Every structure is written in structure tokens, then in C-alpha cells.
Length: 146
Image (tube, rainbow, N blue to C red; front, top):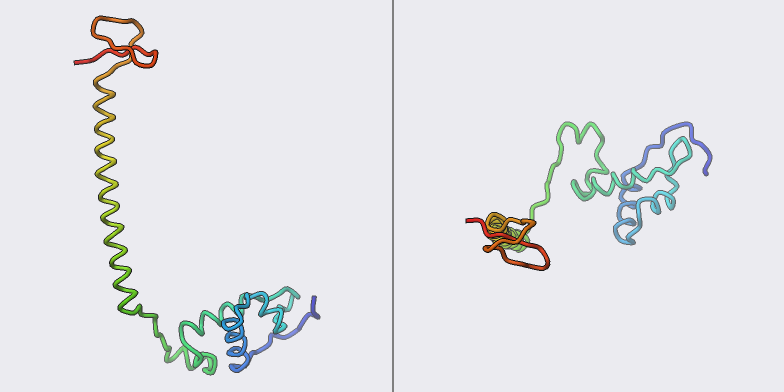
């Protein structure tokens, strides 16, 4: 455990960008990055949510976010949401169509089997004694109901 800090630390934009790029390029986990850059809470525990938040902000807003003051991005937020490319969009639409067809086929198959099982259970009733219209199947006696 590291020494407990009394004050909250403020991180510069350059430091945040350095940590984020290190996480992305070297495929570090958030905990590994927090340990590497000595990010501990005042209680002495590891603060791995901070690098996670920075990576999220970097992917959503870009590196400019780290160099803005909170006043800047509250007044004029830069919200650039990810838009899928045409190829990705077309492949997703194709996958949705395929899944819709598969669901339709599954529903039809289920309905056919359910009707068949319902008709079979309605036509044959298990009885204890043999009669003239009964049929023996696997040791059980069934009687045809008409």
C-alpha cells in the first residue's frame, strides 16, 4: 500500500493522454495502468476506475476532451457518436434478415410439432384393460378415441 494522500490530485491532459494511449497500445488492463502510474485513492486502495473513465472519454470525444476545462465542455459539449460504416451496417442488416427468417422457421416448426403432439394425445388415451379397439405399444395399452 502506498502512503495515504490528504489531497485529491489533479491530472494534466498530457498525463491522461499518455495513460490512455499506453492502455490502448500495450493492451494494459485498467488495474495494471493504475498501478504503473501510481493512481491510488486517499484510502490507499487502487483507483482503476479513473483510467477506465479516461479511455471511455477518449473513445467518445477524442483527445481534445483532456485539454478542455470542465467549464468548456459543460457549456459546449463535443458529442460525436460513433456511426457504423456502410459495410458494417449492411452486414448487420443481412444478419437481422437471416435471424428473422430463422425465427419464422422455428415458429412454424414448433407449431407443426405442437399440433401433431396435441392430435396424438387427443386420439389415444391410456387405459388399464384391453378391449377390442385397443392397440398394445411398448407394454402400455392404448385405446383409440373417436
